[in-house]
Image 1 (cartoon, rainbow, N blue to C red):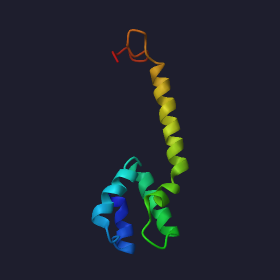
Image 2 (cartoon, one colour):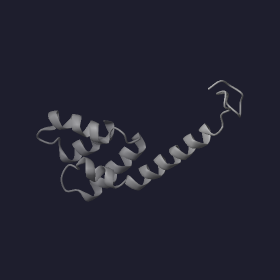
Image 3 (spheres, rainbow, N blue to C red):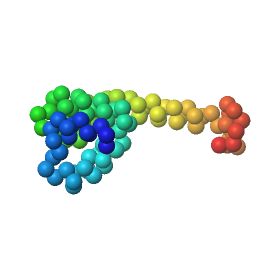
Length: 95
């Protein structure tokens, strides 16, 4: 994850980075790249040591929730734009 590289440059890689890197990918992999980078910078401003995934996520939790809410609303709205036969009500395409 490229967003973690500045922290590795600043703090050095954690001692068990070879085994921890996969956990970071697992725990942060759902974040869009821009939010991951924003969370990383915010965590680096506050943390004395290499930031943990929870510290990185904390800075972007509200924005991530907002984006997820918008996506759910868009999906619901798009679902309402279909005819009963599956055609797109706006463009007439088959869905």
